[in-house]
Image 1 (cartoon, rainbow, N blue to C red):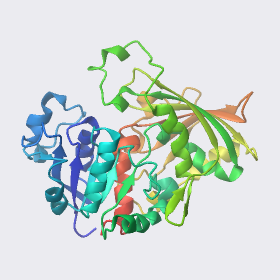
Image 2 (cartoon, rainbow, N blue to C red; image 1 turned 90 degrees about the horizontal axis):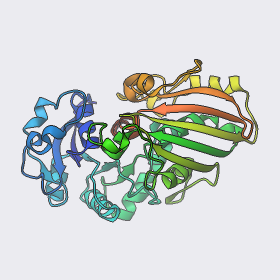
Image 3 (tube, rainbow, N blue to C red; image 1 turned 180 degrees about the vertical axis):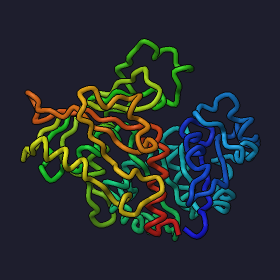
Length: 360
């Protein structure tokens, strides 16, 4: 890319916003031009606003410490003029997020969203670049609805999906009938750390609000097809999910049980996983893992602490594949929830959209 695209981060002070800042510090294609957050942070320097709440492992980038935070809701027109697109990771009510993202899009500012507000809007693509990059083709229909030339919204899926859907998607040719998944999700998924969430220490919480519905519904949109001016979700596989919060800092694990119409062999499944690549690898995008899916033959792998940072936290780890007494197969998979599952996945999606010309 000859000239870096100017980027804004909405919700820059939160955990996902901090992760965006860390990832974009030396990005080869993108340059952070604007940081925006709530009115209480607006007008302050980033360092003043975040202070001791900085929770990334590497230090706050010096170049962003003294950037003055803008108001993400009041300064839409000004922000839209300064940037080529924005990442959105705001903490607001769903209807407020929906309105905010549409306002940016209508101001001719593309929105790459980490939020759930538009995941089921029929002409908003929900993209995992290795799996359904072709869904970006719905963007012209969305622009037509908004009456925009550049502005649009694209969203990433829920962080829990990034562990198990990438393992299932390449197996679609065998006719996946039903999937049972239990997810074991890190505390960072709630925007917290082990230090500031004492209730999770020595504990497992068997409820994450709204998570099971997302884990069951969202995969069907990823498997969906563009029909006319909308993405029509698939009707199968049938998913059922249980989602638990566990005392882990980062990394979501999924225990998966799956039935097929045409049962593959274990060797076929591992071979497909090992050789699988998608549009992100084809385009050699900066944040794309060289190998998306890694299969481990050891009985005790993958482990959250050992594999969550594989390929910069952008790869998915799979292991313990074996036949089951009730389903055809069962296996375990793992992804980094704030890298592949959140900010990293959104950056990768932005790279895809830039490479395909949607951010021109």
